[in-house]
Amino acid sequence: MPKNQSTAAQSARRASRDGAKYTDALRRAKAVEAPRPPHVLRFLAERSGNLYHLVGGIAAAWAYSGQRVLLLEEAEDYWRWTMSGAGRSRRRRMKETEPATPPEPATSTLWSSPDGPGVLTRHTCMWATRHPAQEKDRGFPRTDRSPLAAAVADAVDAYDVIVLLPKYWSYPDREIATAHVVLGEIDVFPDTDCRTALPGPGAEERGVPLSPEQSAAVLRERCLGFLFGSLHLPITLDGAIWQSNWELPVDAAYLQGVDRDMNRVGLRPLGWSLAGRLPLQHRQLPGHDQLEDPGFVQQYQLIATSLRTALAARPADRN
Image (cartoon, rainbow, N blue to C red):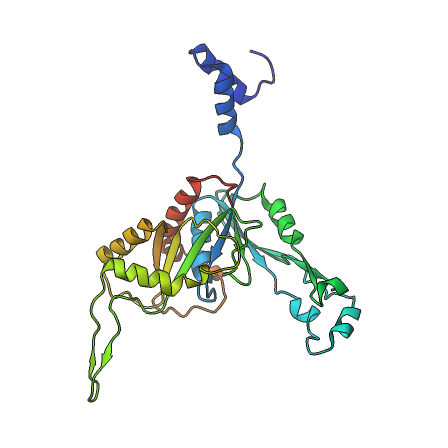
């Protein structure tokens, strides 16, 4: 056998001895041998403030399973500094050529496995720069999104999954993300129709119960309305994760019916997270003590596994 022959070539040669065509076997072997680029995952949510624990828990579950996970967070936008003179005249603002100084990138390890490759890293940096406005820009600064592309390119070889954490989660950014998952936050689960207030003290009738299919339709309209009617190009969703902020008034069989109807309309169900009005801090990822607690991470294991399976079943470079 020739020296310095690749593993793919060796496999193809062995396959050719068994009657397979060498070129076809080599192509298949190279496809298996080539490292798969990491998924760049973008969560979409109308109100993201209460969902950081959910995203952090999913990422931690991946890290516990041996994956290298990066939370790529958008730094506080300095648009407010570059546009702080909104009350001044446009002519005066255009004369100001010095942009605001962006914050320095910051990287921290949130959790790492003591005896394996699993790691959860957080990197915060600017995703865009805004250059001074010119006359043709009608007073608006020019936006350059290359910093986000550069940050993702720097992380591609070091991580298995890159999770984008923008400041505004509802914006469907198609420039970088290869996968999109919608997060639906439920305040009141729609298991009945509207209630009727009757005369007299405390007289309130409970609404008529809804079927799982009806409940699913209400959830889509109530929690996913921000995805519809957007001026941006449509995106392909890889699934939906639901978080209820109250205890659910229905059983597992009812939720399975909701999932079936979601799946019927092409919205792949990936799991339910029951926050139960936990004292979650607004816009805060899980703390160090929680990430070190296997019991806390275990709460998100089923959702993390379902999402990982969904991502593994499709091309990593699909927008």
